[in-house]
Length: 258
Ligand code: ARG
Image (cartoon, rainbow, N blue to C red; front, side, top):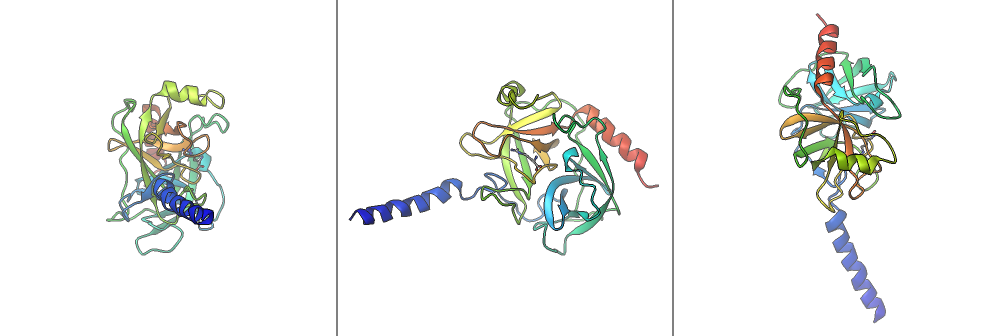
């Protein structure tokens, strides 16, 4: 009798738990409709996606500075849905040169932004497109709805085969600061974003460098977080401030091939 009850209880748990936590990728997201993020880049080492990025010009990918790998086998995959497998839509490039922000600070994560110059120019089509840099510089207001995508770690603890996305909301910097007080300083060059209450939505390991898009505007870059998807703990993003946009445009025009 008790064993029947136990079986019933266990099967109930087996049904309910996946409902609550099952469709939880990136953390708490879902697989994207294939090629709906045509500017999304996968930065890979030996077929493993270590970071994301966004194509901002034919030969340029914007990512996080802590994604600098400096290894010859690094490749950038554009037009991917399943990034670690060959797909006909993909365009694959080696990195010609890394341009981390000159003031990037590894420990504080301040200025976590980097441009990659690709060895070759991406052909733009249905599957590969550039993401426009923001043309206004105001801060993204708390409560603004955002989305983020990546091939990073899901709730299973493993990276995702397919590109995943989730939706988040900007958290006011003050409350973010207090949550990160013990760990690091949250500056005005950063944005904090959190999933809906109890949803555990977040970026995670391997999603770094990917774009945060808020109200249809390229607003930030996945940078860091204390754990992933911890309730009430926002993820931190490099904010695309005027200073960074000016730096990006200058650098590209200076190093653009004639
Ligand atoms: N630093 C991580 C990476 O290298 C990204 C962390 C984002 N974490 C978070 N909880 N939002 O991929």
